[in-house]
Image 1: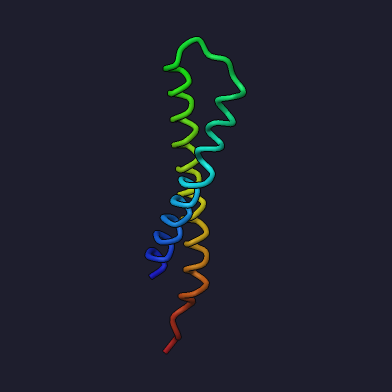
Image 2 (image 1 turned 90 degrees about the vertical axis):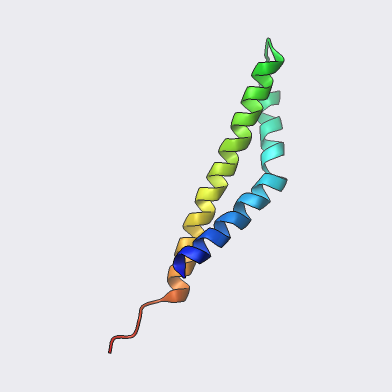
Length: 78
């Protein structure tokens, strides 16, 4: 059950970050630099976008793992 909770929280966190945070963060990072080629812009934008989604997925997994551990608790000793 703990794995299921961790996966669900990770998916929700990654979805929310993908929709609301990653585009703005990638645009913010790209705007801070000057480039010689449009390919460099696209590469950096994609890298920041994917990295922020990966970080959100990992943070969501960790939070879900902690929450799942608290909810499941220990089995009663017989």
